[in-house]
Amino acid sequence: MGIDVLVSDDLHLSGFALAALLERHEEVRVVGPVECNYAALRSAETYRPDVAVISFEGEDGDAISVAEKIAELGCRSMLLATAVTRSVVRQAFAGGIAGIVERSVSPRQFVEAIHRVHQGERVFDPELTVAALNNSDCPLSPREFSVLEHVARGDTVPEIAARMHLSQGTVRNYLSSMVTKLGARNRIDALRLARDSRWI
Image (cartoon, helix red, strand yellow):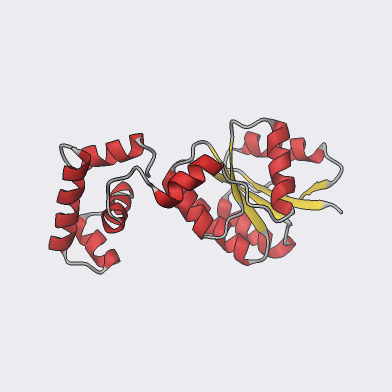
């Protein structure tokens, strides 16, 4: 039985290279590539591929959102990422995304990942996933961590307060506690330390 694969990659040359790689496998039929993630959602609605490969670059939250919406259509979706953080793994895992494959993998591993996802498996790095889901070495409380994730997105104190349904004073208290626990100079330094530790 063949596998219909949709490939979405903002890097045009990369997208066509991935499509060419997949088309070398008789069991794979590429229904793309498409050049942006929103086009991928439209194509997924039209073609209903078995697997959708969505490119993810760093802080591109739209890619995760699109992959989640494609998964809701009944298609298996996976992210093709340049780098993966625990925060991304948590979001993808919770959002029903079937896997994350880093661009550094070999062509053989990439094709294997597509087969595994098509067969119903979830393809995530086991160690990174365990670390992401329990963050056992992170000293922050879940609330403090949520505040830090908002800081990472560039949200201001009033924006964080509104989104988390907290007072601005409470948000400032969480930020102060977070800075103290991480031994940071300020919230920007706390963010740097968290990124260095791959918590976010």
